[in-house]
Amino acid sequence: MSVEILNGATIAGFVEDEEAFNSWVHDRFAALDEDQDDPDEVAGVYCFLFSQFDRDSNGVLDFEEFKTATKRMMLAVADGLGLLPLQMILEEGSFLKKAVEWESTKLVP
Image (cartoon, rainbow, N blue to C red; front, side):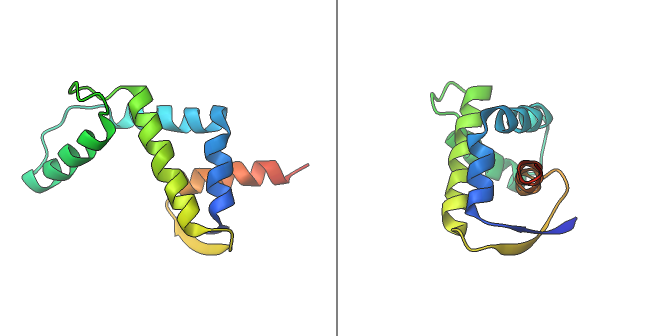
């Protein structure tokens, strides 16, 4: 974990960079793309989230559905944060941490 400063523009910029965003989403999709038996409570949450992502309701979550839903959620987070900088504790490998890392590469000439 690390303490970082970010705002909505940090997230929006990362999402709009298709190469960087697609790479991160691909890695997350691959990590989550496993059929597992979970406790009932967790399984219920996963079922609800799955139904939100599975836009064509075919019972299969494909990469494009996952990417579209993830992008929509992250842009909603960006909109909610606004442009005022916030200091947050971020977990390594998290979406927000990746967005901060992406932004820091853009700041270096």
